[in-house]
Amino acid sequence: MSTDNAHAGLADFLAAGTDADEVPELDRLLRARPLLGAFSTLFHGSEAEVLMRVMVLGEIGRNADMPRWSPDSLRARFAFIDPVKLETVLRRLRDHTLLRFEDGQYLLSDIGRNAGAALTMLLELSGEEDAELGFLTAQLAGLQAVDRDTGDALQQLLGKLNDLTLHFEDAIASGSEFRILSARRRLAANARWLDRGTALLRDLLADEDIPFERASLAQRIGLAQSRLARVDASFQRALNKIESQRVTLGGSGISSSDVAGWLRGLDAAALAGLCADTLTPCPDLTLLAGGHELLDRAEPAAANEPVPEAAVAVLPAPDDAPIAPAPQMEDLRLLELFGQRMARLTAPSALADIVPGGSFAQASYRMSLLALLRDADADGMREAGEGPIADFLRMPVDVRFSEQLQPVEDDNVAAITVGEVVPRPANPI
Image (cartoon, rainbow, N blue to C red; front, side):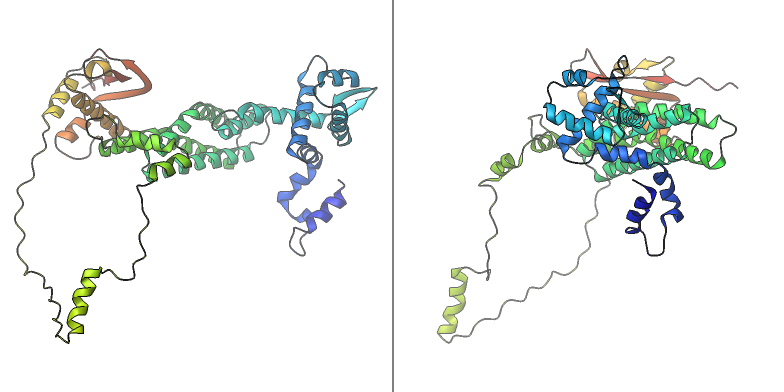
């Protein structure tokens, strides 16, 4: 497309009196019209046409040992495509400079090879749960490796990190166990990209000649990554709160979360079948009175008898509320005994060695205390408050959890999270 035609088309979108050359945001796009035209060629038309063009372009560029293809070799390579349709695809790619035809052979143009390489990266990451952060991190690494301007890439990366933060905060605020678990899996899927992004920022900030605006943007990205690194503790606190509110259906061992998860796996027809004959619509009543009530009111009126006035409902006289007994003191003996055992630790101990013992409820209580201790350390709350719980939170130990489980030889606990409790070294006098 020529410059005059491009400006003429943009005039329909711009405000009156505004020229395309006066808009800085359009300048880079106008200079990249050949590349944009290549993508327009690839993605114009039906879905089937787009798939054929992208596939043919990618296969031609994938064979590094044979960059030039004769028409016969292309027909043999794409024997599964109708010959007429294949010729149409090749002609469109050739007419729009994605392919070149020289000396009776096809080869990729520079624009075609760049477009194919960009699509290859996107397709490579498309199978992951959250491909956007991986693509943005790879894009930033590529620009940094060739010493190009990384300003826009940093802005895109910061926007993605902020979007993830809001998504995780919304999941925690919803109080939904399923949303929190889904958000936690998404965080775990992005963990490696966060680590690689941190390494890239460290290299970027090590450059003494980096502009101030770029350094400020990199620091903001570092803060956003730090918030995401700490959000797992918030997930655990929310899940602990949900765990304390979970209801078990009798002695079946089935909890309300199990029922909710089963219901979420049903389709609309199955849910409608469960509701059949269990829900009835509310009848459209014009009077909340039955036949007997109406007859009792009609008989005195028909016999010209006086109708007794309705009794006046009077509230009882106010009275002092009874004095409630003193609340029962919380039994903290298990907390104190566990705290004494923790205080005697002199070397790192696995969770499997110090948590099990007694009933399953006691082991769960010890595990929740360790999770509380880890969260208090992450939130800087070790020095807050007084009492036995506050004393426990100030224990000089570090608690570490992992995502793996290990079997336990215990009658009440089958498996436990892999982790350890590490005593802190004593401060020198």
